[in-house]
Structures are given as C-alpha cells and as structure tokens.
Image (cartoon, rainbow, N blue to C red; front, side, top):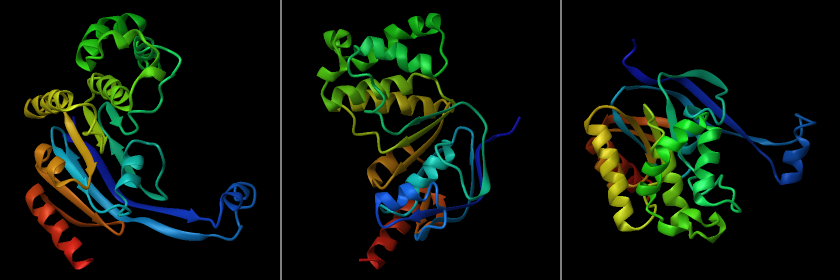
Length: 245
C-alpha cells in the first residue's frame, strides 16, 4: 500500500479570459472567439505523504485556489496528473449548499445523503454532529434564520465528521465564535497528532499555516518557489512579499 496521499505531477492549467460575459457564453459555441489566455499553474509537482500536514501558501492570485480545485476534482488540468489515495473531504464554501427552507437537522440528512451515507449511518452520526455544532434549539429551525456564523458552524461540523483520510481546507478557520473555533481547531490537532489525517490547508495566513502545518509549499505566479519546513516557507513568503513591495 502506498504511503503517498496526494501526488501531483507536472500540472499545467490555463484559463481563457474574455472581455465580458457575453463573449464567454458565446465561446461555448464559438471556441475561436477572441480571448486572452492566462497560465495559472506552470509545471507543478509535489507529493504529500499520509499523515502529513501541509500548508499551500502564497499571495492572492498566485494559483493556490486553482490548485485546490484540481486536487479536489472540481476542475481538470490541461496536462499532468493528480493521484489521490484515500477518502478526501474538502471544506471550501462551507456556507453554501444548504436548503434554506429546511431545518439544520434536515440539512444534515440532505448533505450526508448526497455524500452517499445511509439513513441508518446518518442517525448514528446525528447526535455527535448536533452536539459539536452547538446550535441549540436552532437546529430545528429553518437555515434561512441562521446567521452566517451559524451556517458556517453547521457546514464545518458536517464536513469535519465525514471522517476523511485527507482533508483539504480553503481559508475556513474563521468560522463561528472563539469557543467554536477553539473546539474545531483542537479536534483537528488531535487527528493530526494521531496521524489519522492528512491535512492540506490553502491559506495566506501565517498564523493558520504555522498552527497546523509542519511543511509549507509556497506558490508564486503559478510556480512552486519553495517546498520546505513551514518556518522556512513562511520566511521565503515574507521575503518574496518584500521584494514585490
């Protein structure tokens, strides 16, 4: 059995840029319509071993989120390959995907059903999820009545309790109040310490990167410029930021 959780080999990703939405829509039927091309990722390669905690860091527009979409299968590379060994869960848009007219409890069943869980399994998980989200009586109220923080807490709890072998997170550590963040962070740290979770965080926050990760992959202008211990990667990031003003 391979010890590698994620293997990215020579990934290239290019986006087509159009002047307006009309031209973008027309391009579906007329591929040769005028546009520019932007190379977002250029020959990206790395391996992440099982049990590793890795931060993918870089400024906005560096290609971090595009790389995340490729790893999670939301989009495909122009060339190169990505291999994922293990059950992967991604916490990206934790406020989205809820049916606002249904209650929090009903949305738990909807979300897990979409993830392929049986009703019996969801019933087993339900008490743990409700306790962790700590929404009180609001769990049986329509989600449209929830604050943004409450929705985020429910979404974060749902994805965190899918027991993934690989968890990919995109800037989702500011959810809920301080007490909930501390509870969620401690839960993640426990999984990391037990080596039961491979964690990949996409962030430009030094605090989050150093809190959870031992390794950092720094991306700048679509290329990997540093892949090292997290402190070294952070220092390289600061140096790069200073040079770019």
